[in-house]
Length: 127
Image (cartoon, rainbow, N blue to C red; front, side, top):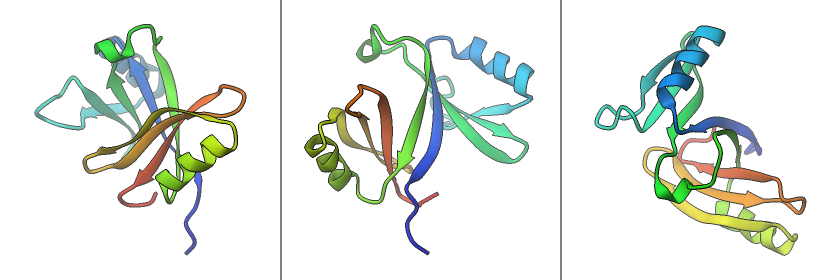
């Protein structure tokens, strides 16, 4: 089967995980649990039934100063380095070059030529 380039993940990035968690559980009926039991308030997975549908990340670190709470989508790519090179050669911008996320893969943050920001994900296991 050929590799599929597609939107593959959505992540809520917020400074108030408790309130957001309660909101999505009440409104959408999602359940949630910590991704890492050692850091239960850092990253949460939302589930609809048995299906993991989204993540939620705490953005209270200084590196996120000035960034509002938001949903952030990711596009699955086969080769993140090659895709980032194409982003630049096509007039886009790399906001955060590829970096490793254990048990997930490599992630980068880019903008297209209109300034629209999106994440790229080269997953360890394609989705």
